Every structure is written in structure tokens, then in C-alpha cells.
Length: 146
Image (tube, rainbow, N blue to C red; front, side):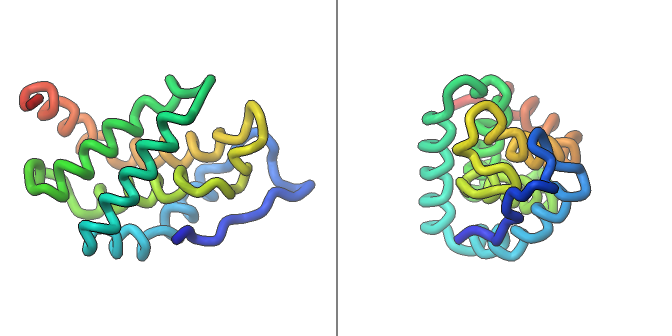
């Protein structure tokens, strides 16, 4: 289910990944993101796994505050409740979540203290790419809470 990721080596930066590497990660997960969008059952399973992983995070949870909003955005997009967003933006956000869900990354999640820094970089880049669309959704969400 997950795209192959670079293994940590002596040459890999231990604290973060570059924006270039994060862009490559997003691109590598594009096909899988498109496939998830085409299969509601697989997407719902994927989103449930994301919820579980997000809820299991301790210590850095506040750094991942965009994740629940991205998950809700995808749910609203899939349901047709919110479609005022370009498909490319949705795909970029799903790509970042695919990377986040994978336990193996440029920096494996099991490394205490720094294991999620690459995930934060990838999610941050996707949110930066989608900033206007993401901000518009957050405003819409405030007005349309159900």
C-alpha cells in the first residue's frame, strides 16, 4: 500500500528532510492517492487507519493539528459535501497522508523525538501547496459545522 521510501543511512540528515525530498515523496504517492479517490471502501479504510495513527501519537500531537482537518476535508470531498477545491489539491493532501501513515520513512517513526519530523515536513509542504484552498475549506467548515 505504501510507496517505497528512502532508508536512513549515515548520509541521511537525522533531523529533517529537504523540501525537494518532500516533493519527491508527494509525487511518488500520486498514483496511490488517485486510486484511493476512485475506491470509497479503500479510502474509508485508509482514513480510519489515519485516525488511529493520529490518536496514537504522543508528545508531538499539537504539531499535527492539520491532520484531522485534512481528514475531514477528504471526507467532505468524497461525500460531495465540499467540492470547491481543485482535484490536484486533494491529491497532494492525500499523498502527504499516505506518507504520514507509513511507519517507514526517510526518518522511521519509531526513532524517539525525531521519527515524525519527515512526516511534518511532507504534511507542511502539502498544506503550503494547498494553503489558499485549505484556508478556504477551514472557513467553510466554521460556517457549516454539522
